[in-house]
Image 1 (cartoon, rainbow, N blue to C red):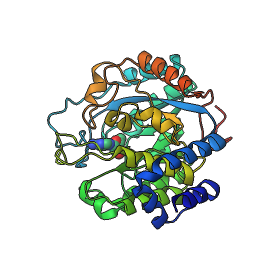
Image 2 (image 1 turned 120 degrees about the vertical axis):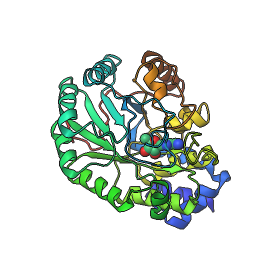
Image 3 (image 1 turned 90 degrees about the vertical axis):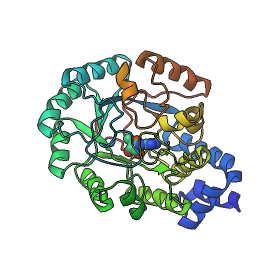
Amino acid sequence: MHERLIEKAENEHRLDEVELALLLSSSAAEEPLAAAADRVRKKHVGDGVHLRGLIEFSNICRRSCLYCGLRRENEKIERFRLPPGEIVRLARNAKGHGYRTVVLQGGEDGFWSAAALAPVLREIRAMGLVITLSIGERSEEEYRAFKEAGASRFLLRIETTDRALYERLDPHMSWEARRMCLASLRRLGYEVGTGSLVGLPGQSVESLARDILFFQEIDADMVGIGPFIPNGDTPLGEEAAGDIHLTRRMVSLLRLLLPEANIPATTAMETLASGARVLALRSGANVVMPNVTEGDFRRRYALYPGKAHVRDTPEQCRADLTAQLSQIGRFVAEDAGFRRQGSMNT
Ligand code: 5AD
C-alpha cells in the first residue's frame, strides 16, 4: 500500500489529501519516503547544498502569535534592533565566508519602513549578494519598494493552512490577508518562500496534508517547515513539541510533490533533535541557513528555547557544515541557488 503510493509520488509528484495524510501518519513509511525523496532531490536539484547566511536584525514585533517568543507581550526577551551599518557589516562578513545569499529576518518592527530599509538593501545588493527578506506582512507598495532596492526573494510562512487554527494562534491576524501577501510577492516577481509549523496544538495530519497541497498550488519556490517548539515565555509554553519524525516525513513528502523547490533543513529541526539537520538533507532537503548574526544577538533572537548553535561563531558554523556535507557526499553549491533558471544572472 505505502510502496505503491510512494512510487506514485516519486514518478508523478502527485498525491491527494487522503494519500498524504496516510503517509504522514505512518512510521513504517518514514525510511522508504526519505529514500524516494533523496532520489528525487538528487535528480531534480542535485547534490549541491545552498547556504543562505541568516541575519537576524530585529526581534521587535508588533504581533502576538501565541507560539512565538518575539510576540509583543513577551517582556522576558531583551529586544534589539541592529543599526543599518551593523547589518551591512554582517552581510559583508557573510560574503567573506563565501555566502552568495543573505536572509534578512526580523519581527514585524515598524521602524523598518521602506525608506529606512532601502539604503541597507542597496548597499548589500551592491556587494553582489542576493537578498532574501523575511519581515512579515507589508503592503504591496512596500514589497515593491524593497524589490526595487534589491531584494529578490521573500520568506513568509503561511504557518498553517487551517484558517481557524491560524486565527486562533495568531490573534488579530487574518489568514486571507497572509495569503494575499503571498500573492502580492508573486505578482511582484519575487521568488516566494513559505512553509508551516508541524505539531501545533490542535493541528491534524489532514491539515498538514493540505499544507503540502497549498504549497503545490501556489507553486512555492521555497518551503521551510519545522517542528513547533514550546516557548515557556509564551501562552503555549506547556504544550507538547512537534514530532521530529512527522516533520521528517513532511520534508520528504514536500520534496516528492515539489521536486524542484528549495527545501531547507531548518534550525528548529536541529534544535529538537541533534543530527536532524543532516538527516533532513538526506530526506529531501537541499538548503541550510546558517546564522551569521554575531554574539549575544544570536541568543536574544529567541523564537523558541534551546536554539541550536547559539554559542557558535559564524566561522564555526560554516566550517562544521562544510565538514558534515562532505561526510554525506554533498557539497556547498557555488551558484546563488535561484529556483527559476535565468530569473537573475547573479
Ligand atoms: N517553534 C518553532 N518555530 C517557531 N516559529 C515561531 N515560533 C516558533 C516556535 N515556538 C517560526 C515561525 C516563523 C519562523 C520565523 O519561526 O514559523 O515563521
